[in-house]
Length: 207
View 1 (tube, rainbow, N blue to C red):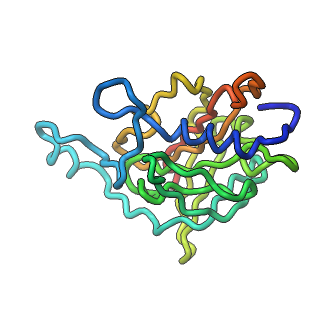
View 2 (cartoon, rainbow, N blue to C red; view 1 turned 135 degrees about the vertical axis):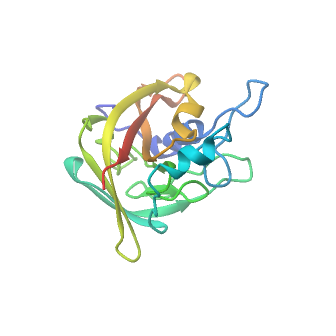
């Protein structure tokens, strides 16, 4: 997390988030991108149906319109983010608002729901300025337009160099509902004009 806010940070963060949301497809070592549809909870493997029948069914909520993370003072409405024509996830337009990847998983359904936000702007801290300070056990609540909630509990806070972003680990299928909160971090590299890392919060459904 940079100590000093820098001019051009919004533009740079947009690039940072694009790289975080990218990821490499099948072979070739190229950038991989999030699936355009909901991420499945399980792969098709022998005995899958029997195992799934013994697992709880998750109803989830509708499209989330608000995120609250009380321990770092975040309460934000959510932009709906989609893939751009270049196949990369767009970042939020407004530094004061986070954005939900609407082409992915709805909160409370099996798989990782993804919310991204800026860390700072040209005028001061942005919505996810305190994200790297989250601790295990903190909660994040997503609500839909009908007031239904999905509350997640933070399990891990990780930082990844942009060049080594583990796409499958962050965006890949999970057997239960999870949440990923993503922003930039690691200081600002003036030589490249980019932040050095991505901060990723891993959270699981609490109730």
